[in-house]
Amino acid sequence: MSDYNVVQGRSPVFYQNFDRKEDNQHQTHYCPGCGHGVVHKMLAEALHELDVQDRTILVSPVGCSVFAYYYFDTGNVQSSHGRAPAVATGLKRSNPEAIVISYQGDGDLAAIGTAEIIHAANRGEKITVIFVNNSIYGMTGGQMAPTTMVGQTSTTTPWGRRPNNDGFPIKMAELIATLEAPVYVERVALSDGKHILQARKAVKKALTLQRQGAGFTMVEILSPCPTILRMEPTVARRWVGETLAKEFPLGVFRDRKPEITPVEVPQKNVAELLGITDGEFTDEERDARREHAHPKTIKVSGFGGQGVLLLGQLIAEMGMREHMEVSWLPSYGPEMRSGSAHCHVTLSHQRIGSPLITNPDVLVAMNEPSLRKFGPHVKPGGVILYNDRHLPEDMHFEGVIVACVPANEIADQIGSPKVANVVMMGALLEATECLPLTTAQEVLRGMVKNRKLAEMNDKALEAGRIYLDSEVMVGAVAGPDGCGE
Ligand SMILES: Cc1ncc(C[n+]2csc(CCOP(=O)(O)OP(=O)(O)O)c2C)c(N)n1
Ligand code: SF4
Image (cartoon, rainbow, N blue to C red):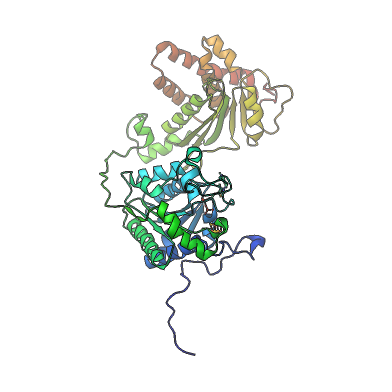
């Protein structure tokens, strides 16, 4: 056997086997002649040459580009359609040492994800975007993409793209290059060997810049999709050079050092920024204060205008004053007033992974639809506070404490229906003892300057607390009808 040197082989950045999920093993992922495979190869080789495999995170969204995670033995995150630059932003900001790549098709990047790419580029996120422009939606069978050329047929433009109806092709490299922040933007093509080498150089350059911490880099790669274009692979490749590259000129659109002068702002935590800390605390003092506050997940829900979002904010602010980790996540429809609204509040002793709460410890239901919607999801042993004297007749909740507090009625007696949410706050503190009453008073007083309203808030807080104590929770546990057992 003669000696030989391997000069081209499988990049070690690729997995040994490209296994597919379950029973699809017999299928290949990319069609013969597809540009994605060529781009994968140059990307893998560049990562290997730059010695960054171990710290690379590849974000693959929806489209044929999603298959990237079957090939790259790197970190892989799959994002929803168009959102890869946003996901990459989060990954890069939380792992500045990582090499983060957003690998996207043209439908993904230039249609559903237009906002994400523009804003990631505009913020100068230090990520690399590999943009595979094959002028069509590949995976879904050939609908018009933003990059489909005038006159080009697709399943949604069978007569050819007409600018008067479908607009003009969007030239993403040029568009991104108009922004201030991007560092490097180049368009290349997979039309022949020479251009493929140029594309390889561009991909490596973008990654090199990222490794140097330079800023936002993007390589747009004109690529063949022989299956959807119904062309032989060799014809499709030629078409990329002879037709696609005419519409999308190749070249470097941006290559410069960023001219971003960082604006130094003092680093403060949220409580300091809001001015709700009363002096410097030692860690011991913080821990001691936190001891009296109890972790809880709370959902507050009702009609827009009932102050449900504000009630959630107030609880979150109280938690901050007790040096807890807090989150507040509002959710409301387009018609905020009189539509329905709810918010998720977490009070925790640890950092909070997600602000979303599916099964809360506590539900404050300010109206019946909220009770029906969220009541069944309260955790066993949790608490439901319902804004009425009784539960609707057909409703029963097993294994949770239900307290009916007619907050609207009580607020009316105090003199303003607006303070019904504060009545509920008093009831909530009494029912759960999650936060000290004095902190609630502090927060409420800080919120309103009007003396009359401040007095009403104080009364409402107290009335809610007393109602729960005397009218509802005669025993430790209220009955399902809201009365004490
Ligand atoms: C939110 C959402 N909308 C639509 C789809 C359907 N969909 C899947 S892939 C795709 C187009 C992808 O085209 P492109 O980004 O050009 O990638 P290619 O397949 O050509 O590589 C669409 C519209 C989806 N999966 N999710
Ligand atoms: S449909 Fe097109 S983009 Fe998708 S794998 Fe096949 S050739 Fe590639």
